[in-house]
Image (cartoon, rainbow, N blue to C red; front, side, top):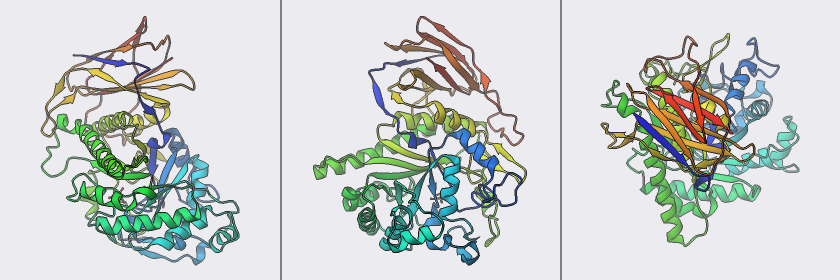
Length: 497
Ligand code: AHR
């Protein structure tokens, strides 16, 4: 089979906001406790932060991390997690029916974020709390001093304000599972009022309102419209969440359909963009609302095991999906979809980062990388600069849900800082190699910096044994033409300059 990618430097999607390579740490399962924070573990520092986990996260180059939830945040009292640890209350976490000791809170998270070299995307509780709790949290984190909450931060050991810029106004407020679920009107109104108060404390904040927690929710569409009608002028982004897996009547051997699920993400994003722009037109507004895909991933492997988790444990093994090779291929395609929509998706968080539906897993002894670690690492490190509009010529196939899935998924990014171009290409054909060629109009490239392929594994194989690795890919470069043979079911990256 043949497939061709044509790119033209004058045909650009957008400058890529690096925050699309964000991730997520929720106080859930073993993400925090026994994940990023494990006092006494061999690599843990004096603050209990695991250095081996920090090193692994650094490889993923994650510029922003959403915290502390997730469903957790909708019942969380942030004040429980500040001050002397011995005074912090142990609480029932009603979202996950676990015990929350509150040993880890804002200071611990921000200290960890600094060590990782990432920024916070802080979520406030608009489920069971409201306007002042959110505004007080902004004051605690961002106000320089001379007020009750900012002085308390100083007393608790943090002299300088944290200056957190990106904030989520609640989480999944449309979800029947969410503690404090609201109607679109109730939520939109509350988000607007919270936004006003938070911005009164710090007018440099960037605020994300909750969109739908899934395109499958019956309120999808109306939810976005009604919420934006309430808070358009006071927010900057609308969120969307999307997880994939073999759900309901999905046949787990139907790989053709599974690998087409990035088409669904593309439709979801474009649908939300359309609603945002309809609201803009209706208001005759100059302001554009962009998107924050602040939870996305594959999530289904652990669903059954999680029904058996004993409640009220501290840091139970929950949502510990073990990812296989086909999941890595889907994650690769989803990343390409994000880049293709980078004109409107400015923030995205792979949910999550450590142990909980995560690319990085820990044991008491060390860390291991899941299959999905590899495509994410490559795109977050090299998918930089400008996303070039791809023209892909390749045959398509029809699957159970999707009438047209291209066998080749591909995009190129151009980093104008160093003159490097990176091509990501996935061959979804299960049996045939793909003769991949490119046409780089007006883009002069002479050298291959690095080319790798990720292939050769059984779709259901996972990486518990740590044997998965990226392998070299042979690339031919002939008078500005790049060509390579892409293996069946392969994820490929070619870096040139
Ligand atoms: O990421 C796991 C959970 O998925 C989050 O807590 C919630 O927001 C979503 O439903």
